[in-house]
Image (cartoon, rainbow, N blue to C red; front, side, top):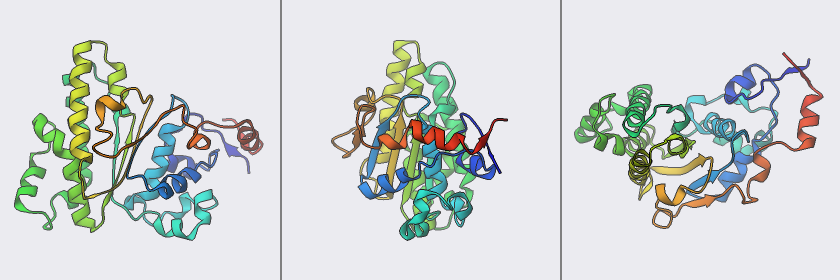
Length: 267
């Protein structure tokens, strides 16, 4: 039976459920994990499969997908017993800044408050667990659509703490399009304010975070990495688009396209 072509699809789970055309990039999961870089900031241009790749990692590592071997059977990563055992075993904090479409720094922070508040609601059991201290419960209760900026800055780090305590395992952090909000801002003052804010947000999340197992942060360009991240202090590995590392994980070769198209029908 021919597979359906789903061009531009960014949901790995949906592609696999639909049995749509999928060019196997799960080698990236193994390659990244084996590198053992604790924090990786990786940039790739638009339309190179960045968002689909990071969603694939989310489906692979997140315990929300525990036991979902149906998503990975037949793919590269599933050939390894170590990775079959690893699938679905980590609490994952997944943040997609592509969802922020507001204009202006204040409006962007308001949207981010909504996104992170919804994340807390999604992990309701973990953020209200009896494993948390009273101080931690108070902080969790302060997270909401109208939270103070100071709470927002600490909210992602706190979520890794709460998840780790609840599941008794360190968290994996995945961030997509970390630099997109800055690229869409027109006013210099908004860009400067948002740059400073994102630096505080990610510094709080990454710096000396004993509840963090690994972090993969993807963007469109590495130009802003030094402004947003404390690269040396936090021992962050920055991989620019020009770097050959992981080159096979993004974009498609002619051979990959021809092989995929031989087994596809266009809807």
